[in-house]
Length: 438
Picture 1: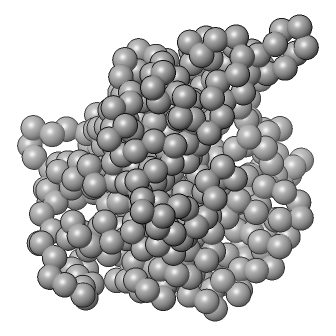
Picture 2: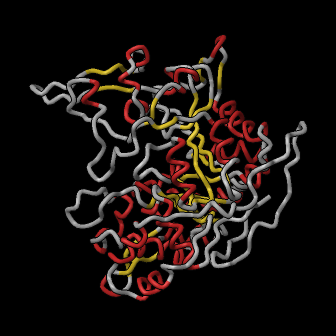
Picture 3: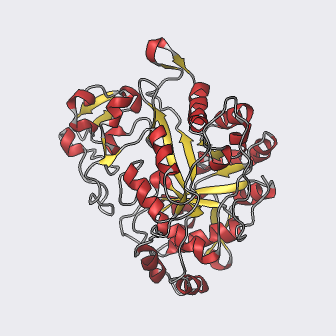
């Protein structure tokens, strides 16, 4: 895929439907935004802009305050896109992200004990993101049933509940909740207590969990022409592959990767609308071989940048990945920026970013709005700002990071836990996000 001009005002013109082994139903996503469907950003982007230090960027963003807002593929709804305030991977988070204009929506794909495909950020996070521990008949099936903390010895509570511990129908009966668990809990109820104080439980009465098929139908039915970005989750150590499914079936990693893409083909979703993701290079190579149209748009999530040794390896391997057909790389924000310039106070592109652009990769990154308050001592998690932490001291600084990612790194899209923040910036500067490669 050739590098994209992020400031182009071009829209999708490709209408190529990938060749299928069997006829598929026509694709009937909503192609227009209905007059009564208005993208609504709410107050947060305006709060963030007002919180910025004085700068030309702040002035530009202020000038866009009354500009019409659009459904924008530059903004990818991470775990739905309403995740800052709604339970992740739920219908409610997706509808919130969509209402705020996310043009691409995410489902992280795991499987159940009977090989049903479901939306969940990790195979083994049900104890943190659902109410499974409040359902004794399911809690006892967990890979590690709840074991209370011991205040006398300082031992933390232990628990691990995986999608592969329960059936598809059992999964569908769960309620999604805000992500969080209390390590010092002495009861299951206490463990599933409130999330970090900067999140909220206001909209977490019972988040509607989704199967992959339900998610595809939901996104297809949204007003506007949305894209899909399913992530094939890497099985954890508690989920051995090949997985022993029903009737002692050996469900391999390739079977898993195949099943995810087949779900879109069965629903008649053309490859140009789908941006599959994985942290595993072999998944990307498999899609390139077996589903070439989908493979061309697959996104290699690159977490190797999170360690010094892995970072160097990641940079060195980019040329090989390009030769093998990978078109899109997606490290987290820490892998794409560094401090430089006068007094080492300017956000600059990293060596990974420079090499990736030199080789012609498109770049996606993650995740904005996942850190909470950014002020010094405010209690947020500054992981995504690690290389530039010395210049981050207020919430508005995330727009400085986003601006550097766009103008200096050249990212084509950004995952965000609150879609409105990215949509506001993208609309202000005319960004449109990725165009199909098939």
